Length: 186
Image (cartoon, rainbow, N blue to C red; front, top):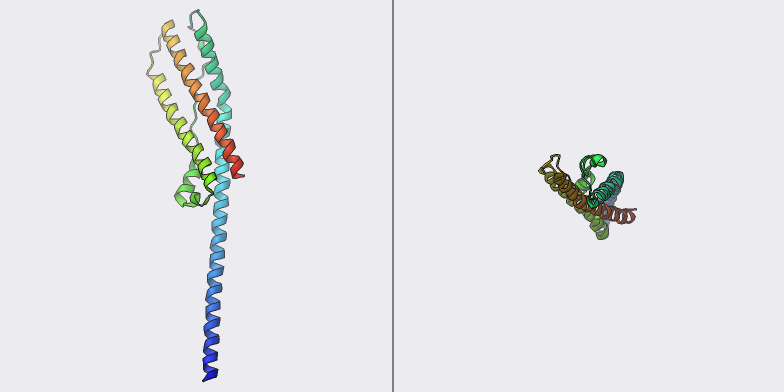
């Protein structure tokens, strides 16, 4: 009887150890997969942010030039007709956000440290605000009267001065947020 009890106890212990090891290996494997997904997400978000940063860097000087040129011409007493040859459109941006959206949809975004989440959210919130402002600005510009008069040219120049000032501020704020987030991510 003792022999059967000890055999049964040994079998129970070995089965328990086997089940425990199976769970441990499964958890380790799952944790490893989640870690790989997290690292891929971080890498994709960093790449997306850097791509958006490059877009800003490509237009920032143009926006500063339009802002400064329109300010200069508004301060001139002469007629503004034909002076807007520097203007090549508003050239505002649309930003990528697919890596960010993927992180939110998969729930991996919530596994990040709070400081990283806040820094990344700050960027994408500012990008959305920039895009909204760009759409409003474009609507305002389209609805303006374009005729050959000096008053019309001054009105457009005033609109561009104010709008481009805001665009430049938003782009500089975005670049600051990007630098902060990238330093936290890496």
